[in-house]
Image 1 (cartoon, rainbow, N blue to C red):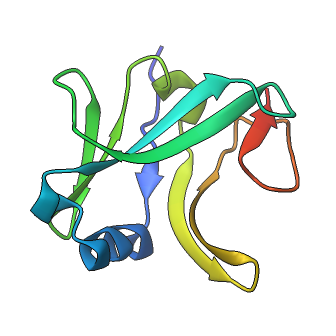
Image 2 (cartoon, rainbow, N blue to C red):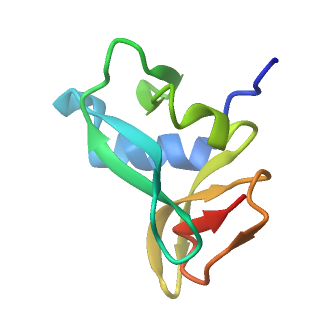
Length: 108
C-alpha cells in the first residue's frame, strides 16, 4: 500500500530557519503517540534525526517523521501558525476523525 508522505509548508520551514534548527544540528520531529484526550497526540520537538527517519527538507531545514508515526501522518500538512492564542507548529491531518480543541490530540 502506497502511503503519501506528510507535506511541510514554506512557513514551517521558514520558522525553523528563524530559530536556527539546522545550525544546531537539529530537525523538527513530528511524532504520534498514544494518549491525549482523543486517543493519540502529536509530539513536536527539536531532535537529532535518526537514520531510519523520513526526512523532509526545505530552506536548509529538516522535518523528520519516524516509521511508526508515518502511517498516522500520511497526507498530513505540517505548518507554523501565529495566532492570538500563540505561535506553534500545527498538523492538519486528513486521517483524524476528530480532534480536541487544543489541536494536539486526535482520534482515527
